[in-house]
Length: 167
Image (tube, rainbow, N blue to C red; front, top):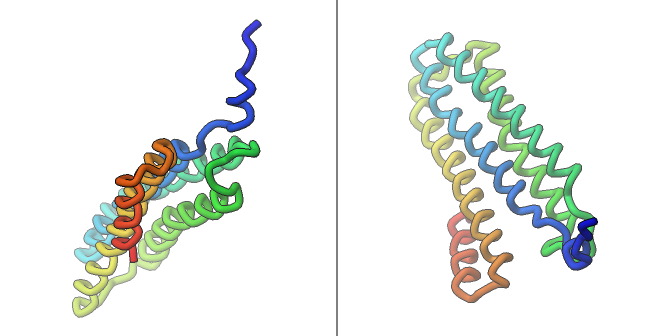
């Protein structure tokens, strides 16, 4: 009979790989927003509907990852960060995919036409929002590396730089 290492049980599995999978799925969802917007600008509602289906599918996959993560989040004594902070992060990440789904659903359902004067400012806003999601994904990857390395000096510096870029 194979016994489990008591130290493994005490420290638990790292939650960062599932967190990374979840933010990557949310980022994938966010990446669909600009093509969706471009399709609506030229009144290509068939293409917008196709992209909306992709968004809905990705958001559902993100929800599945979120549920799995919450169900399997270790409650061990020695998590590298507080459990409540991890749950908050999961919630914030989930809102990314949810908002993309909501925006695309409202625009498609109403067949919203954006005035030409607003198209470029909205495009810039969406690019910035999607870039923020990509930066958050990158920051989480660095945080995982930081925790695994025991907060090495160079990794900590990279983390601070990423946080500054987000602001």
